[in-house]
Figure 1 (tube, helix red, strand yellow):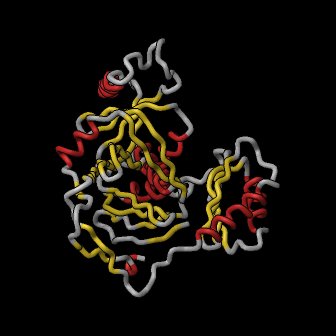
Figure 2: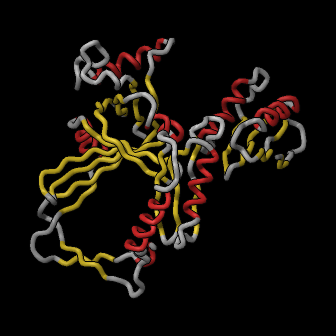
Length: 334
């Protein structure tokens, strides 16, 4: 808890590490330019993953390549990622840069803009591997190019000497640290229970334990297998609660993320030849789609509602769309 955090008190007592924030436009970008291996971190539901990739930094974008499918499918469901690069030589001699921003796939496409971006990406990656995407490519399975827009960037550095020693002034109330041993033991009990469940080779069930709560993430073959996993976990005596976030491998059963629901809503509006109002906005909020803005006709208003009610994964539509020269309507529809 933040209220129980230790307060650092400076005490000068000999040499101590010097920690500092890096300047974005000089030091941070110099580190990005000077390295070629970084790590992409992304989250889906409550599970966080991190993977190493080769990259090239150029003018506010990080370019890289990977194998199509797999982790890319998970990343694109959210698109927001963090990217980290670090350098170190000794324990207290290191530099680290963290970038946050959306990830986009790069394909040849049909427009000049698409082709220009694709050619640029290939040229940049060939700085690392000259034979990229040729017959002599040493990693031909990495056939998908991508780029990350640097929306946020920050960096930190540490030098072995030159700083002040900081001692914590601990407050009376101790922080809630959790019981690591109990969580580990409960996790093993659940994993032993799941070992007795016959799962499809394609299924990947991940178990996390926190204070008696089991969080299930990953994939199950179908709804029946998902239910079997849940029943096995509930059968473990010390499990107090289960957070069920397993997804089925069948596309028809997979639940869309909030970002996917919002993108589908925008897609539905763009597909309609009659919805041309640029002031119509959609807000995805707690499973609902909320309409904001102004439309110029009742016909447009009704068409927007009809299309958004068909978006899979949405609980319904909250209508706050105003019709010009008409009374403001505010309805909740299922």
